[in-house]
Length: 200
Image 1 (cartoon, rainbow, N blue to C red):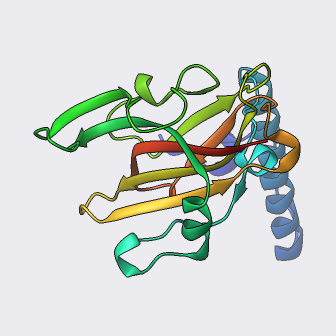
Image 2: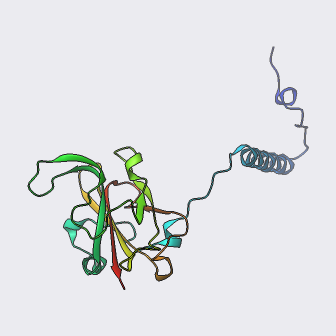
């Protein structure tokens, strides 16, 4: 048994001109789009917002950089800061040791230990992750240290080293408001997040 379109669609009616058919088709598309948008908006669970880096951090090397292609001026500014600690999330070779997998704070070469005044969720993420959350609270730190810059390092799928540098705005140096989302370029996987600062 063959059916025509009018039998299948109760809202379809025969219209006298091609312009009227075109207008009706546009109206149906608009109504379907609106109803789908409304349905999707109603069924979506509410998720607590994550503060983007742009609110708590300033991306100094937007899109990241490949260190072998030359270092940006932000890297040299970073070298003037006090190194605090590094969150390692990959295979590293520390001086005098064989290469090994780290998923922890290095806590060897910096002035502060991670997990006390600055934090990350990097250790809870899969090894291949292009982004992580960080947060900090230096209120009560006895030596006057505060956070100034963050270096996020990693590598692309082809093994190319990538990095990105963030600066902490002066108003957020002692305490973060919420969390800050960090990434290199959205594709390279993070292998470390290094925290830098200064003291009064």
